[in-house]
Length: 89
Image: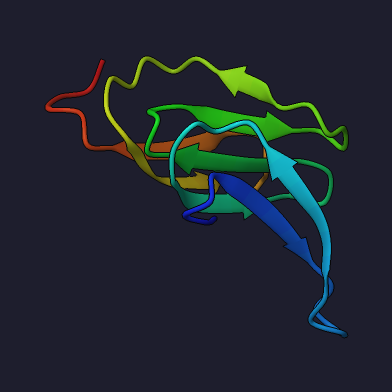
């Protein structure tokens, strides 16, 4: 994640940025990925999901405050998130 509202994709062998994903309107606090999907949680209270395209999908999970953590389950079929919400929806 980044303070510039983007998600960067990096080549671990060269350390070079190989792509920038846009879609948040605030800081990006957390990023996780499977072999084919990237998700991020941000200060704007949204979770964004990229499936290999440059255009993100917004995952509507009912958070009303910034999303501080996202993580796929071990199987990769569920997405967990933590928000600064006062209570769960």
